[in-house]
Image 1 (cartoon, rainbow, N blue to C red):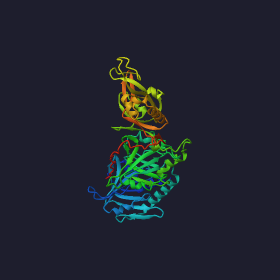
Image 2: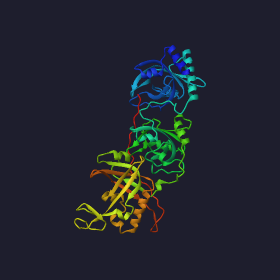
Image 3: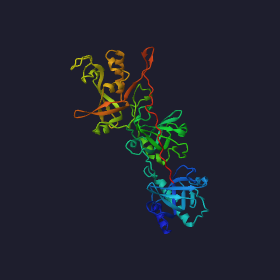
Image 4: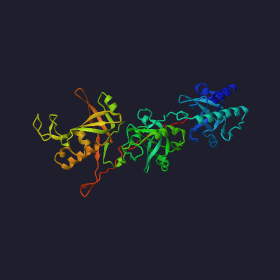
Length: 498
């Protein structure tokens, strides 16, 4: 095979492969040959760094599915433009440094290097580099090896680039512990605002916490959608994006209140490419394209605007990280949680029976309108209803809406008026009907010890039920969902490779 011929030729000329330098403890090296597989954005000189800097990644037959990091410093920033993806490069007299636990090739102003454009072969070099017959033989074999790789490339044969941030799929984000990550997806919707943009994206893997505000359009179900909020100067790069475009997003950060929504920001002095539109023939899209081809939209998919859905929830005060119902039930001590789930059932079925009488003196309940059975004093009306939730883990949980927390949950419908006001009673019936139609809502819960176990109650959660009225009567139901939280100032992960 060409790869073995290449390695044998290096050995004959007492030259070492990339694998030799990547795994060893060598501080200096003489010469390497490699192909450039990826380049990052050029970084301009700063107050702490006099030279311009370019980080790029190289590979050779000794690490066919891997790559090595190269850091090049130049006084003349124009010379960094010579480094292009898919070119072959020769590097002489460089250093090896330990960076993030891995060997990095460090090139300074004394390093000699030459790049070769394939088909037709064209040489660009610094320091008056002179190509030798050995160089020509090695480059010829390396070119033949690259041609064979291109012809036999499969979806799983793309070269992996080293990074401190993982490249995550939608289905991996919630379980992965990394706060910062990279993401590749297809744009399904672009919503522009004054100072930000919201991208609805899919990579055709499942989102365990589906986005309630996504508009389904008989293309992709909401279970496959994830939202990214774009800030700062990156907003301008979203203006030309259209549904069906593919994007690569770098240095994404999870939102604290929901790990399955994320954002990207750009500092004023940032010169990295964080949002890049990519073409369908890009090798990094191969797995996504395969999933897209096998994806079939459910026949029952309807065009529903969740922004216009008349029922939502609001959690006030301190936002918390979302916890699945499965993990909530595993916690054996009283705690507070925030979760996202569907309402699948409730008891009692008759909303009139949700109202009970409560005695603050004796701490006992009775049927509504009946004096306390202990002290015979009048009771006050309160809510007492059990609501059953189910989330993406397919786990169910029974949550009690009782007393003050229930008064908050149904805050526009006071318990004291439900039995006497037919309009409010009908509004309560419509609210619970809307709540059980299968949409996801955010809820804050807390567990409390009761007898021999834990019971769960709602806390700091409100149902927001909005109805447009016309001439004193109810018209078509619609609502505009408010932002539950202000966007936090998440800091980008600094990735200076010096």
